[in-house]
Image (cartoon, rainbow, N blue to C red):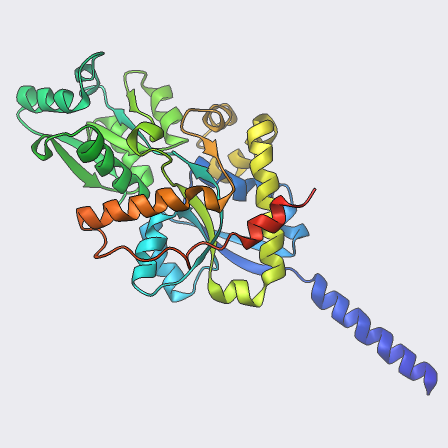
Length: 336
């Protein structure tokens, strides 16, 4: 009888251990950009599985497009721009930003037709005005939908930094892939893009000109973040902590050894379309600034939210206190 009890107890312990060892499936929504590289490195290095997570990726064209999936509960982890989360939160769709991944990602490029107007010493507003005077129409500039970081950043640069006349520029909303193609074929005269699109378009056509960097468009521009749903964070806090631990390691790897990280990012983003050399170059470009600490973007996010109110994307600014949860990062950063 005693032996039977020992065997039963041992079996119970093994069953509990096996259950604990079973990875938790985490449905990840992600946009295919270099700013999302930390999650790709985390997955490619096997660090997510070490944390007890089996990441299942779904690709979206923009952050705003991903919000519906977040609202319907079809994703657990959101990897995209922070501003759609602020917009969603104002509408009652909650999430917790646990890490940042990158800042100042968005840049502005002018296509071959518009680029000659951006001459040295000519203010951007004058360049756009000169284009309209010569061509008889405003410059068509592509960005992701209203509410997205690309769209907000482009509008901030046009109206607040460059002080352009609204008659001289028309913003056209389209997805990431469509934006890249539109710039390459001349369907638009310029665009707000990020890596790897910047490296790709300039590699294919050197006449596409980088006009403004992320810092020039919106200083400390908040970009891609990793956010989790409250339900997932409550059900699996230890898994979320393991994920953030891994993301902090990935951030360090991307900064210090980008050549080692490049194949992992290429495996996720390339899919036979973008080669390894392009990914390597994109990881070290002026548009790639990796930052893991979510606290580093809180102030800039508030400023961007205020700007969204001013352009009508948001009805009113919402308090950001509940959007960011830096506790996971703080624990991860304190580990050796």
